[in-house]
Image 1 (cartoon, helix red, strand yellow):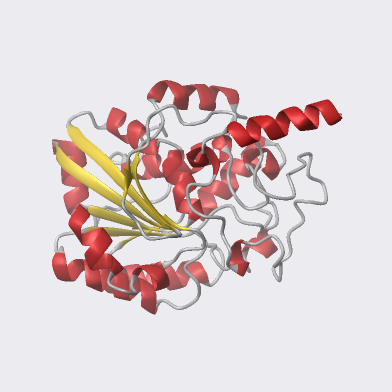
Image 2 (tube, helix red, strand yellow):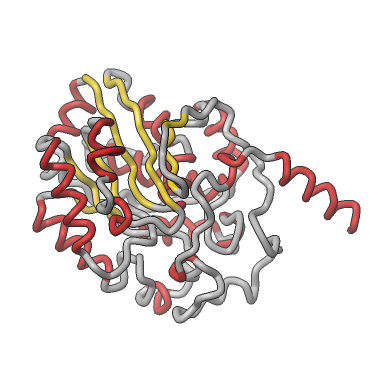
Length: 315
């Protein structure tokens, strides 16, 4: 056992930062295993032993070079995807089988995005949030979306902060300095760290629209974190869940501001439960997804953004 433990530590130390935590470790209590006003039963029956600090070693370190952009301390701006289609397929072949119902998509507030995905052109997506958003983008789902829409030139930028929410991005001119120059066509605001106050989300959208009036927005609920997806009552109290008060609040903001709303929580729960495996099989630490969990998040987004035909199969 000591030899195995030493080997794991050596492998973990050799893993590039991007493979596990490109965003600094989350420090807010929502994302911390030490703060659990919402009950979580996952550790009690977990087959996985997580390190006291850091994460389990990456099974599939991203195989594409990561392009980084200047950012403040504690913030990260990088280009996505960082995985090849071959690596994505290898991960999906190795992970437990999962299934979920594709999220509802009516395209009402994503008309420009739909037009470009269907007819072609350039589409630049900006993903904004915390380390959960970072994990989602590290899945490489943009490569899958490009595969599904070959007529469109798709690129993505990730702008994240550990425990980051719009309350951070709206301050100190960050939107004008770091977001607007990227000129995104579509902004995804998500993660588990936005908090209960809707005003920061409104402020960020307003600041972006002041310079980029044609930009479209997706407001997404959260997934992963410390709350057990097998426990419906616990999920109904989780501060980032579509099944808690947060879901209707976020949907209300989307309706108010003409943004798209994406329930990431429900299909994630369905996927975890459908696997028949303990949720921690999809985690790299007590809060964050591993490569298998990242693929669930990526598949949800691809399914949602390619739902031109409601009866289409999930990629």
